[in-house]
Image 1 (cartoon, rainbow, N blue to C red):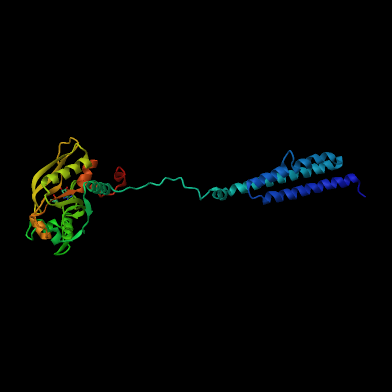
Image 2 (image 1 turned 135 degrees about the vertical axis):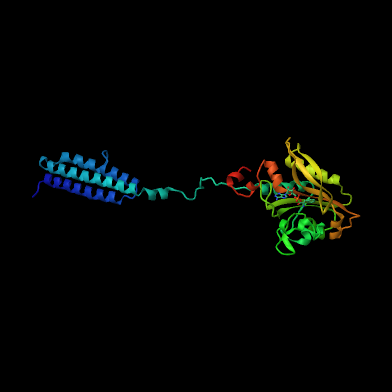
Length: 340
Ligand code: FA5
């Protein structure tokens, strides 16, 4: 028969075995650092942990059993510490998973998006439409692929006229072409409507001009047309001066130079001088609608008079923003475009 003390000692050894197997199990099962820490406190905690309890148990054992118990205790403690370390490493290695889990994908992103904006030419076009709108002009449109009747004949430019030279126009066939001026829209509007008329048309026109700092083979014009009883050249000058003052500033000066266009009589070139500059810039042509044009669209030139003008949109845009080369407007270099 074993003595009560021996039975107690054997139980102490068995408790060490249980401590080891349960501790190893807890560390092996831990799936995150909180679980590892909880296992560490339960098994290895030096205040309340089960290892502390097992250490204190030593003092209650028979002296003959203490040596063996001490050795086993040290080995159990070492194994549990290793298991704890191992569990910590294992969770540490899987950090990327945890990082992914800790990102809340439903939160708004904090990366700034770069916003684009309209092209300076589009901005200019919008502003011109707005300014002329305030002067009572509505917007009219016409096709870029035109027939020669609207581009030339109805505008009093007969077949033998040098302006119809194939070297100066983009013909698509004998009778159709890329329009060379927005004056075509004057005809299209007058064909459909009766006076009073007050319209602006803005859009692309095409000419095989040599490309340089002020010329392009494709550019934009804004065309204005006002027809009514008693419209005079004074109205033309007033409208253009009001427009120029609003668009370029009140210190803009405007000058009419005698010129010739087949569809206006008299005809002028419109120059502008701006901000105390010293060079007059030609912005476009203008004049009083030629009676032949009125006849071509069925208006009575004895009853109605009118003025028309056609301005280069690129030149207006360049003047406004001090751009010195028209080609910059078409190269689509974002570093350039971002400035407007
Ligand atoms: C005309 O095109 C006439 N249709 C204007 C007009 C309308 C006169 C109504 C009378 C009544 P012009 O060819 O001068 O005119 O061109 C008008 C403007 O377009 C020029 O002053 C200039 O600002 C611009 N322009 C002409 N050619 C080019 C080009 N190759 N590149 C850029 N802008 C140009």
